[in-house]
Image (tube, rainbow, N blue to C red; front, side):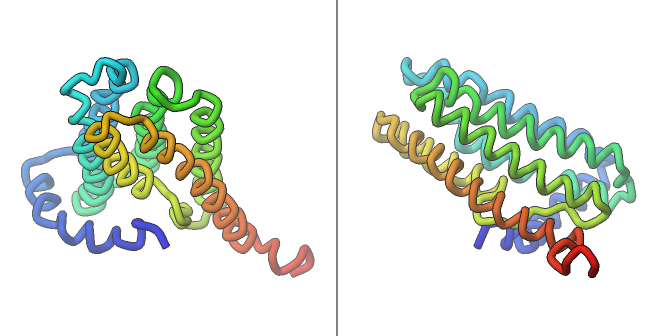
Length: 206
């Protein structure tokens, strides 16, 4: 199970906003860039953790705003008829950059052990790579798995808020353990699915 299974309902809930954006001529690329900007606005949270900056409370809503913008960019592109391969490139790059902008500061200069953080980030990026490989082979982009982007951002929002409320770092350490273990399971799930997509599961002669 993953929060991605709720995406159709989430998109339906955003339908009114989607229509309003299209009617006002808002471009899907602008929404993709805004999602990256939301992540960029959170990059200083690792540096400010020890000082307990009040602005750190903006990180959870920024994570949820990023998810909303990531959903809307695709919806707006499809409704406006502007979906194109280059838009897909921008979307994938923006997604990976957004993940790193939110999480790398915690792993490199924040309260999380750097070794745990780096291994978790590498596993997360490898999981995304396998998802994109399916699209490169002409199949739908793989978004399945127990701990995909939506799960990471919701976990970040909840555990970051808990860490701030308790003035404790263990919720963030838990976050990176969830990312590491969840990404490893998701990686295995996607590799298995990719094996089916390529026909390898039917045997070389199949």
